Length: 403
Ligand SMILES: Cc1ncc(COP(=O)(O)O)c(C=O)c1O
Image (cartoon, rainbow, N blue to C red; front, top):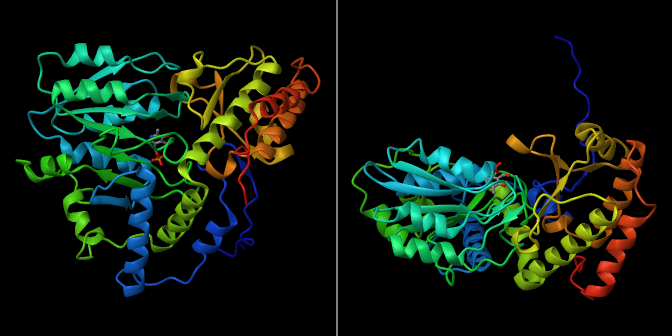
């Protein structure tokens, strides 16, 4: 009853995880700004700004573009429950835990769901989707552009082509890729695309930006049955994010402040420069990891997701001990594997604010010390040396955030 709760003092971690990523101080300042009501005239302007920035980052003119009051999984849920109803068929490309999640959530609808799978570490083959859908009426094809559980990048174009042949909408999970990997929603004709604020946008967790093409909106309008979720019914949620700004639910006002500021930072850097920064820093990280004698899960360089690098845990090395020592001794957090990859890989995130040259070099130096302490023979200074060489030879100025 008399228990005293101590002062609130979270540690200052470097979050080299597959999300959340560390944030720019400007985003913290926005988060701590005075609260206003969600129908305040000033806040309506802040919502306009947020939608303008979201359209710039998704590279779309889509009217229905807004941040859902939910984490990235809410984006998955909204995408499938708004499109699927009784009698529909869906194909979901599954190559890891998060694309599997799309299939699982879709299976909560009355639609028939077919999974087209690839081993973890590889993207699904679009030809397999073509084969699975042949002669059937398919409503949606879903995939994760960045599969965070294995660090795999999927190229969207081939899947758009197959979805066109099948007459299906294309749904793309860009939770781990938006603002770090090239993605042009309009040019690539993605029908529904969603993300998470805590990854390469480097805002706090808790919002899922989503954008919907006019064609997908038309599918929503012509549904025969009610959307099974009231909260995620995008047509009514849009009364608040649309012209009328009618109350739907109370949104996380402070998170929207932070998202707006984080997206301003994204656009100040520019999408192209930002993608290049992610690419350069991952190349240096990989050079360092390989020079230390470690192997990557994703063998083909073109399949590697720039924001998440999956590193095979060497035989005899304890996953948790390495991660705990990195945290305790260096304040660096990396992640372990999920599902079938648990205890088999580490996942090193270089997302948004965390994709920086100093952090890559610090991580490689810290990892060398930890691996040696855990009994692995690592050539002295090899990781940092190889990363320095990588930066030198690739001559990029984009490897560090410019501010
Ligand atoms: C590709 C992908 N999709 C969906 C999710 C789910 O997002 P959240 O954990 O924010 O609900 C994640 C989370 O890591 C993800 O990486």
